[in-house]
Structures are given as structure tokens and as C-alpha cells.
Image (cartoon, rainbow, N blue to C red; front, side):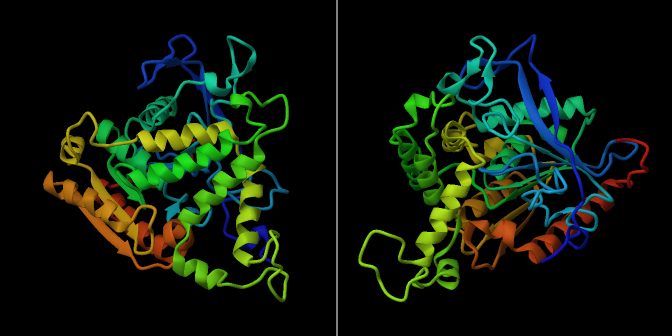
Length: 392
């Protein structure tokens, strides 16, 4: 077993909190308002003297602000992208000031449905307003302002994180220099909306859901676990499931001819579903999946070309994976075609992998080489100086 000293982790990291919109609530895309808003965030590395080396990392559906390092000495696992964030890694904290923020609507420190509604003194539940990817990004801009950063060197993220990257590029191109949307899409297909809806329906069907007002009693963990199981299937690929599980039985020599766990893949999915209930809120799952379904980069902009019309000056790295059937490569190729049509500087790589959608987290060596090369290009082009240690 690897010890903390040999993992190459950045070490102990403290989650920070920023509250805004207390006097002037944030206007949401739905027309409703929200405030005050607290954002949980973490930072890694140091700002350089001219504050030009900041990179924002956007997390996926089940992610959070804790992207790297450890929050406590006894924490068993590091942050969700620790393989790529830290000294000498792809997002090299010897060079860059890396930021990761928990989205609004989430359940890991940022304002969401399990937060206390200041008007009632009780958790929001379903009285929390519906939020969109655009709302999440707009909230992030307030944090970036708070940190005194006029322009990000890059915004990067995979899956739902990639949606946030695209929203940043389309809406705030002047606030960034490069965009790295990874394993993502400009809009959900009907099939993806259908998968999300089945997950939501599993939560609604749990007798403990109680219309979202369950915080004083038992939680709808059974429904949330099923939702996670459904989602997790879409993160894998048929090949990876064959390699990992095949038709292997779980602690049995033969079929039980009952409704207990026969196959290893069944045991795996149940484990993943149950573990998810220990760290995620069912209402947040409803809100965040709905935000993903609502996301359409061309909506109100006419087309993808219209969406990127004002962000052609950015430098893009678009990444997809051959076995990703959640966001197949044609989703990324559509982005690349639109970016090329508006004259953007765009690099595209469709990485050969058997890991499915999860490849952006699992293909560590390939991602490290690719991201390091791209970021070094940015450092050279924009003459980014390393941090001196005098600015935090």
C-alpha cells in the first residue's frame, strides 16, 4: 500500500468558503433570485506576481471542491483529480495557481437544497430555485473576482465540468485565455435526458423522499443508490465491464437461482450505489442532473457558431475517448467543427481507451502528457512567470 509520502500528493489542503449576494441576490436564468450564496473552494499552488497563472478546474456531477491533496491526516483517499493536480503533475502547482469550486446546487459546502433557507430556518429542499450550468458559472465569476484574478490562464474540466468550461468560453471569453473541455458535450441528447430522468424517478419513488423534505428523518438512500447505479453504468464501457467483471460470480460457485447477488458486476454496482449515499444528497442529484439536461450551448445563441463567435481568440484543447458512449466522440467533433468555422485555435485528440466515460480520470499517463504539453505551450505563448511565493 502506498503511503502519503510516496503518492506525490500536494499534502494537506483546507477547504475555504466565500459568501456573496447577501445584499443583492444573484439573478438566475429561471428569473428567480438566490442569496446569500456560499461557495466552497480549494486552491493549490500560488499566484504569481501579475496573477496570470490561475487555472480553474470545474468538477463533474458527483464531484466537489476537493480536487487534490488531503483535508485531514486520516483521510483515506486524496481529492478526485489528485492524479493530475500537484507538484510536477499535469496541473503543476509549482507553476500554476489551481482553483476548484463546488457548484451551487451541490451538497459539499456550496449553497444548495440542503442549505438552510434564511427565510424559514430550515433546509431549502425543493424550495431551492432551479439552477443551470450558466448560473453555476456566473457564481464562479464572483469567486474569481474575490480572488483578484482579472483573467484566468485556463478553465478545464471533464463531463459536467466540461459543460462549465464551454459556458465560460461562450459567456466570459474575456476572462480567460484557454479552454479545455474534456469528454463533454454542447447539449444532452434525448437518450442522456432519459437516463437522468430514470435516476430522478428512482429518487421520487423512494418512500423516504417525502417531496424533498426528508432532512429531519430517514433519507431516500435506496432511490439515490439506484440513481447512482444507473449513472455508473453509463460511465463504463462494454469492454471495460467485460475486462473487469465478465460473467464472474460473486462469492458463489454456481447460480443461486434467487434474487440475491449472483454476479460480480451486481455486487460492484450495489457497492457503488451505497457508497454514494454516504457522501451525496438526493435533492442535489435532482438539481444537478436537471442543470445538465437544460444545458444547450446553442440555445438563445442560434447555433454553436453563434455561441463561439466572441471566443475565437481563445486557445482550445478538446479531448474525447473512443469508448465513451455517454458523450461519444461525435459530440466533441461537433465542437471542433464549430470552433474551426469561427477561426479558433483548436487542438483535438480522440484518445484510444477502453475505460469509457471515466477515461478522463483513469488514463492518467496519457492525460498527463497531453495536458502538460498544452499548458507548457500556454506558458511559453503568454510568457507566464512562475510564482515567487510572495502572493497567495
